[in-house]
Length: 381
Image (cartoon, rainbow, N blue to C red; front, side, top):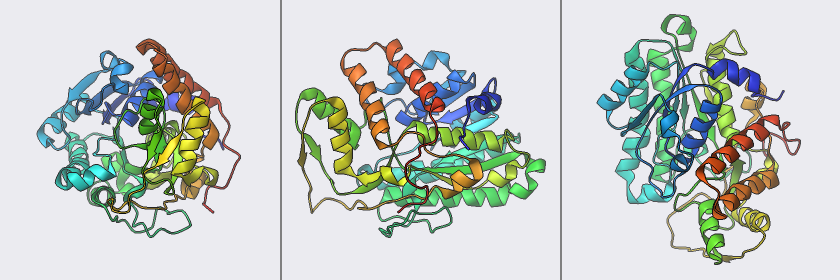
């Protein structure tokens, strides 16, 4: 098993109308580029990029879109109008308030965006009364984190200490409720709306310019020739290149469309997309890998015992995605950070927008050509 394959993704998305929320963000821009490479007709709906530079603008994606809506997922009327105009065959919902520490500063906004935004997307799809495959993206932080050594499985309780994590658990409950109430998988042939969720581990890759994320923070320090400030060097996370979960989302969407299966209703569930166990490592390993790939640099431990709570240990089981979808990670820890550093190095050395766009497409092609990673086991320790 080594899914997704280029052939099945082309069958799934070439010529199809695809609606992507959050397309101006880091993951959304990578997904949009991949869908455009596959020949999809992409409509995007998101707030304007909140970083400068932004990957979406660096790749100049807007002119290539079928529709480009700069609006808020909390605005149900505008969202419903955009979805109706697109009449999508596939929806990828990525729009979110994505930062744990920001959720402490703006808890209500985080809840409104991540919970009601998710409900609004599902309501907009329901209002079209047309068949659709919907992949709703949440987070590995949706689980009630008990700092356990083994990876969380898809049937474990939702929850979260901080508002961000809780909002992602609540979003999963919204998805499950709408699926049971309005889009039951057993009646898929009648209503035509296949709904699944994707829960990804910590993603890295070229073009993330957000504040308060370890890789962009590292790159900013490296480009200035300063020591990297590291907030939680011992915190353990499941690290993966952004192409890993995006490949999982695209594969899941293909199955919901019936590509590669005669029973798409079997995939109307939640799926984890994370790395093998060798890539579930402490932050200090991430910083070390980036410094090594960059070729220079150092870091400082800036641990603060009075800082707001952030989980110290998070592992993710990907057994279900491996068994049901045939999906497994392709790039190990070293390759992930080597490719990430390669992108940022090109940007730092003055690569043009078209050159960065070509680099993204080349990395997508290289990812698809790579075999499944042979290191570790999909379950956890």
